[in-house]
Image (cartoon, rainbow, N blue to C red; front, side, top):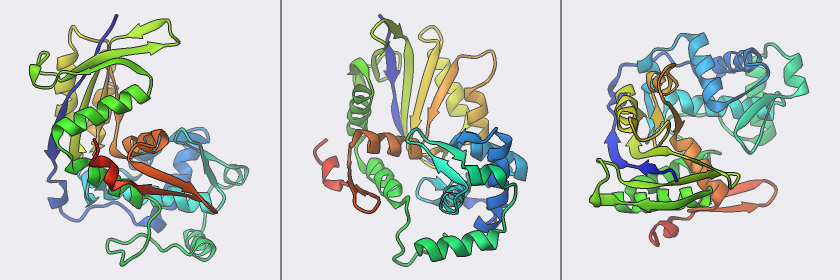
Length: 295
């Protein structure tokens, strides 16, 4: 029988204090994004695509850590818009598992006229270009930001209970949050069963975080894994720096899977925890703020 461990904490980032960053605007991200997906073989996860675009644009760690609003970086925010624009334009499609892929039209297209894409999308869907000050405008990912804001407001013990619930709903068994009783400084344990036959010893760390989780946090987490597990999972309401992502997958070290705030929000939507999903002409996701009061 194998265990996993959960730890919760709250951190903040000063990334928003950096000077004006080099992240391009939406119009100048469209072609690097299209080229990145072509370079990945026609499909990729959000993390893979973002890494490829950042590499192509030679963005620095400071560029990638600049905060747009709340816990979301400007780069992640604009990349989400860019993916949406190319999807509406007919070049991208995405699955429920978060994989973005080229359509037939996208495979035939190596470069776009960015102004044409933006004009088409605004006319087709009547949605604006992203702006730092959106006066009453509804953003397709606004529910994610609202959900993360709700998560940041709950108490540490409530967040632990929520993580416990998410893990149970995701197929984990014997999930126990030990809290203040301590377990080598870690707060919870349980078992991950695969196919009813295999058990995996996994360590989890869950951090409420506004901003980007640094590489040092991943190294500290890996240190807690020594003698306890071969694999880890790090869950945050924030994002991860590029160095943190590279450290998590470093050769010769126990691998750590990373779940950022956007992925956490998507998982809660999938499990219908804290959100109400309705389908009219298209899916509408609404954060159920009252739900958090019952945790």
